[in-house]
Image (cartoon, rainbow, N blue to C red):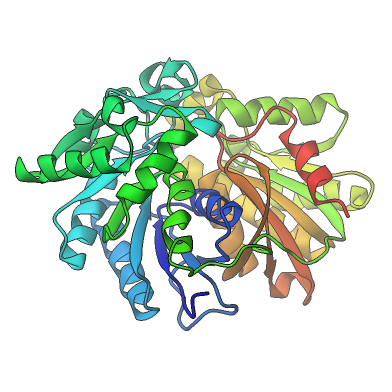
Length: 428
């Protein structure tokens, strides 16, 4: 087994980091997730380290600076391969941040080639002819076209990424992928000979990801969604560097249960509706009321604290796209998002201080705000709830020395009954 970390990962948001860590754990890699770049070392030994940044929607120059700082820290830990984790819906703008960060990491590693593959077929994300599909829909026809921060209106990933990078972008089509690792490597070399620096790689089934994995052995930088991670551990296992069991073990769960939801995705809207239909106790956070100065965090805690311990409670700002757009028109996108994140983070911290020890957070930006408010610095990764979403465990002063179990869910992930299913999965 390895005496240190093998794979060092840089994720552009917190739920995406957990999604990646989940796949690595399921493939047998002991994985530790850090919240931001640590000041020191790790609390526990790990085969893979995932540094969770909150860099997806910040200015590109800031995203580059944060990512390079994470890279320096990971290289100090002796990692042998670097993984830049982006969203499975390739969330970005014409200015970045996927292209600029990939360019900067390649430069820092002295490499001239990487892939870009957001495919995760088990979670309904596939790439064919360089086009990204969400289920049966092109990305541009999916709910992502209404994303409040990074609306995705073009499914052609070659075109999307070419607008962000100074390198030429090419394609490894599915017919090549289907022929296996040797054919994929040959395609890589042919693209490099043509001056291509980043290759979009097709994948329409998890078997494709497992074919791609061996072709990435030794590649200094991998740029991808979380799906590619299922194909990488086999490279380390073949060298005898991985153990076989226990990668997803967490401490026993106890305490009250709660959900904090800031995502406005189609999936999370359905999950909130399901929770309410089941008669769950909930408090809705209205951004317009926050803007008027109402202390909705205090109101939410007053309403939810008396119900702790009976059933899970929910605080949510989740809304339909039309409502979100109306609020953004009045408050502006950044102000509306910041008001909601701050309020939900205060609610989450107050609930944990009141005895919540099992907490689900829905939405990448919300998850980032919540873990920062809780003072969480490192997460142990545990069993999967749904594809892309595991339970984790962390120590935080807010929990008075107890273990806090956290599920940080990307807004787009999970079935309609995710909230109830998640707590059932954690039950002893």
